[in-house]
Image (cartoon, rainbow, N blue to C red; front, side):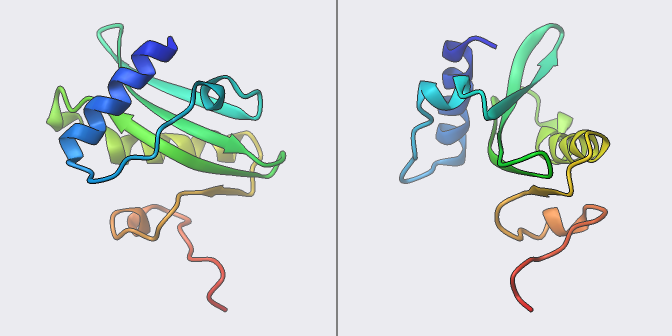
Length: 117
């Protein structure tokens, strides 16, 4: 995807969520060979993306997801998480770190909270 498109979606997402403070995504994060961008399209138009950091061949982190909320009924947030978990499992990764233990994430098959034992 084009960096301008990604930035537009991210800005739209942040405005929609009414975040008081926003960490920018630097262009180098999109182009870093250790990162992956997964795009989500509706009728050929990019409407959402995930930025995923690869640590090694077994561990990756979902750094940022953003979408334009053009069609709320799509539920792209949860659909993207399910898709990415399946993709990285198929690729042989042991862990895909999802960030905070939000309630909606805890409903995903295989979810676990790390570091509390």
